[in-house]
Image 1 (tube, rainbow, N blue to C red):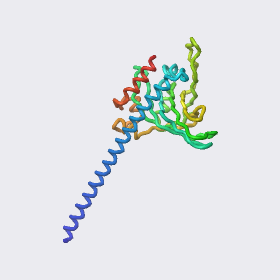
Image 2: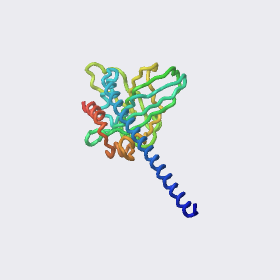
Image 3: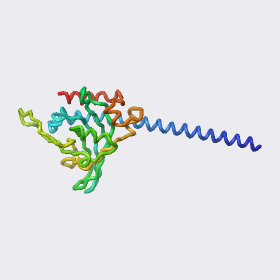
Length: 241
């Protein structure tokens, strides 16, 4: 084969190889994006179910009362805790924020919560957690990539049980966040002090089909997905009662 023909042939092979690589890469990205979107929708649907279940649980009477004044709500359908004496915990959930002018609630932004806790933790446990952002500081804390509860913002466990008959006064709260948790495992409660909240960028981008972060979604309304309607409607209805 003449040198010039061989050179042209090799150049053609390189171009074919590059084209094939790009095709495979784009296919991989598309598959990952579709997977993220599907996972995100499952989390949204589970968040709606968790919110409804917890709100109708008589043990969480005060959640309904505090929600009326909350600036935002975080819902984690499942936080897994496992280990023997020393256990890790974590899960993925959503944040919705109330528009202070219109009262409407935003589409959800996706977050993870994770922590390492120490104590008598035998076996494994799954907990449903609802956290209320009670002030502007709580919302601002969530607009950064990560935030540590108890350090960047204070958190308290919300009161459990029904209110006194005829009582209308809601106990004052000074914490930035209030947490309400239901657990079917061996634990009496779930302490989120020291937990780290982090933005889950891949789900935000996959669900809304573009590069958006929490500020774009919850403050600018730049993320829209019809799959959030049931969740937003449930939160808006409960907050307006």
